Image (cartoon, rainbow, N blue to C red; front, side):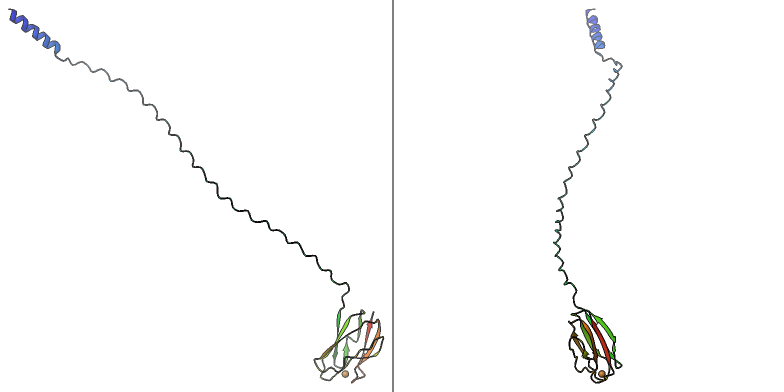
Length: 159
Ligand SMILES: [Cu+2]
């Protein structure tokens, strides 16, 4: 009888030890994962300041050279053509100190020879294409002719 009891005891122990299938405890609700921390935005790379463009050198205005004052009342040069046996212009008015250039356009030779006036002048013989310049410095009225063709007469008034 004793033996049966111990068997029973063993049995009980065995049963007790038998792993009972217990309902698995509900898995603990996993905590919601923390939202991922926002990655810090990468710091913007410091923009390297562009090399300072060398400022254009200031153009220093060159000092304007003082205008050379033109000599007042510069002498003018006038022209008289000897053409078709005439002096052209036949009468010319100039200022004292002006010059007059006679140019022969004729095939025949001519001269411009002063016949009356405050100052003598004579171009001498001029052939076609030749010219001669005379300067009249004394005011007055000059008449002149062509020595070869006395009918050619001209007048110059010097003021
Ligand atoms: Cu002549």
